[in-house]
Each structure stands twice: as C-alpha cells, then as structure tokens.
Amino acid sequence: MTELFNLKKFKPTPVQIIPASFFITILMGTILLMLPFSSSNGNHTGFVTALFTATTSVCVTGLVVVDTYAHWSLFGQLIILILIQIGGLGMITIASMLMVITHRKFTLGDRLLLQDSFNLNSNSKLLLFLIRVLKGTFIMEGIGAIFYSFVFIPEFGVRRGLWISVFNAISAFCNAGMDIIGSNSLIDYRSNPIVMSVTMILIVMGGIGFVVWFDILHTFKQGLSRRFSPFTIITRLSEHSKLVITFTGILIISGMLLFLLTEYNNPYTIGELGFGAKLANSLFESITLRTAGFATFSQEKLTISSCIIAYVLMFIGGSPIGTAGGIKTVTIFLLIMNVKSYVAHLEEDVVFKRRVTSESMRKASAVAFIGAVAIFTLSLLLSIVNPAPLEDILFEIISACGTVGLTRGMTSSLNIGGRLTVILAMYLGRIGPVSLVALLSRKKYDKNKINHAEGTFYVG
Image (cartoon, rainbow, N blue to C red):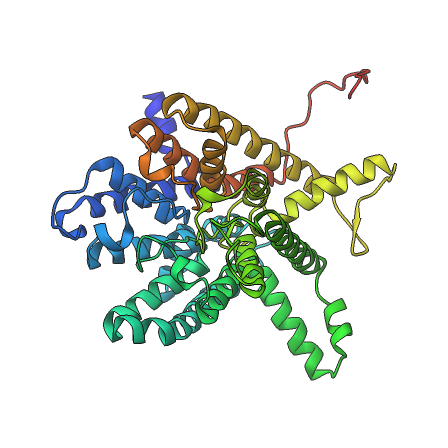
C-alpha cells in the first residue's frame, strides 16, 4: 500500500518528461510506419526497420536503412516529415503549440517544462518566445520550399516537385538530412547554385539557435530606428550571439579550407571539379557535417585526413537552442577558454567583456565528457556486434550521436545488433544535450554534510 501511495505522488521532472516524450513519439512513429500502406509496395515493414526510420526522423539524424524515396509511400513519407518537424522543434514545443491554439491555460509546471526544453534561464515571456519560434520556423521553411520549387517543379512536375520542395525545406531546416529525390542525396545538384545555397542557408539558420535569431532581429530593428552605424549595431548584440556567430563562422570557414586542402586532388570527391565548384562543395561539406546530413559527394571516398576533420565537426555540432545536435559550439568554446585561463593563470574567463560563470564551465565540461564517453562506449559496442573498419565505425557512431546523418556506407549494411546500437546512439544524441542541460542546470545542489580538509592531488 505504501508503494502504491508513493507511486500516486510521483511527479516526473522535465529531465524525465523530455526523453520520455521523444521515446513515445518514436514508438508511435514506428507503429505507423509498420502499417502496410506506409510502404510503397503495400507490404508490412519490419519492426527494426520501422523503428530505425522513426528514430532517425524524430532525432533528426538522417541515417536510413531503406531509401526514403523508394521504400515509403506518400503516407509513409508524410509520417516521416511530421516526425522530423516534431523532432526538430521538440515534442514539448509541439504540445505547447497545440495548447496555444486550443487556448488552454499554461500552468507553472507547463512553463517550467517548456523552459527546460528550450534550455532557457528564465520563463519570462516564454509564451511569446514559443510563438516567435514557431512563426520563424514555418516562415523559414516556407521560403526555402519556394526557392526549391524553382528547381524541382520544372524537373519533377508541379505535384511531385512541390512535395519534394516542402520535404527538403523542412528536412534541411530541422537539420535532418533526409530527402525524397533519389538515392544519391544532393550529389546530382552539386553544381546547382539554388539547391546548394538554399540548403546551406536553411542548415545554418536551423543550427544557429532561436535566441540568436531574435537577438539579431531586435538589435538591427532597434539600431535602424535610431540610425546607428552597422558597427554599432553589431556591438550591441548579446555576448551569446556574438560568440555563436563568430565561432560558427570560424568553424565553417576553417572546415571549408581544410576539406579543400585534403580533398583537392581526390578524384572520387571534388578532385575533378573546377576550383569554384571545389570551393562550393568544400563549404557545403563543412556546413552539412555540423548535423545536417546532406551530401554532394560520397563520404566513403573521403581521405583519412578528411575523416578526422569530419569527426571533430560532427562532435561539435550546431549551437544551443536550435535544431542541431552535437555538444554545441558554446560548449567547445568554453572548454577552450578553460584551458586558456589555466595556462595563462587567469582568475576569470572573460568573453566579449563578460565573465563566464563557473557553473557554465562545469556544465560544458560535463556535457563534453559524457558525450565523449558515449561515443567511445557505443563505438566499442558497434565494433563487437557489427565488425567493420575503425574509421567507418567512428564515422557512423559520431554521426549518430551528433544527429548528423552522414555515413561511409555502413548504415545500409548494418545487422540487427548494429541497427539497434545506432538507434540507441541516435536517441542518446538527440535527448542527451537537452536532458543533460536540464539535469545540470538545477538551481539547488545538495550541500555536503561534512566539510572535508583539502587534499593534495597531483594532476598531469
């Protein structure tokens, strides 16, 4: 009786609700994708294949074991697209949107849950932030679909061309990397400026973070009304926006130059292209590796040097409070700052004349460490259940954990154990950053009951 009484009083925390919401959505998607009319041939789809597809959709990863354009019917593709949209925004965001539409009142618990799902420090004006996120998302996806339609409608006709345009726009903005064009991702469009440009813009806009969007819009609107110079407007951006924009730019440009260098003479990737096309495809590779999953050349043919670069970019991922995965740009920057401050004997970590709190430093260290441990553990597990070359295993697991979706051809050949391992990696990669941040951002900590004497420990 006592256990039943305690069970009734059990109230799940956001740390439990957020992963559970993704898990339930994945199960619902799996059931729908197993239905005969979800496949193009009208046959029942196996549980593991449906589970893998539902997971990669909700976790906006993009790894697939069957071709999205060929295996699934229009209904199946629609289910996948809905799962991608839910996964990109988050189940809590979607549920909150439905509450707004139906005029349901938000309780304090609802606000706290939404705050944790967005990883915000305050629930002030939270509903306004939610509405702006939804409007911004649908506007960006709509604009992307319009530009895509200029290419896909003439090629595939109005009906199919429009459907491909909408699917690709949502997939790119949510950093899912799935498409219904064919089996070659965007390789056939590697020289198409519209498809390349729109895809890269949508990936960056989805991955840069909603907070940065709104800060840029507010600051520029305020600056223009007061007739500030462009330099003054930029300096008035928040320290978070400045950091995200600067570090994102550095990662994109450095990634592009490194890929240009390591793949310049590789005939299987960009070696046979002109210099302009080499530059454009190197830029695309640098952007898509940060959790998008589209490809303009085969990842199997990358040099080992390029694979190492890819591992780093996939591990870092996008920026906080967006649709991207990875441990995030701000996390890795704070780790670099921590090393710098130790080497330079600095008492404070300062970024754009603002002090970084010790709490943020501890959180960054914890997220990066747990992410690295997860990759090591899952790579070891995959090598046991599905032996393959080490570079392919690392690429597969880091891609899954970072919700990137690129593969060196290993995904389609995974056995049952391998598929289940990658499913786990995708799930942990999607809910990991959200859950960890919610867990590590508690306002209160249990105090030690005893104050211990300081010990001497030799490090390094």
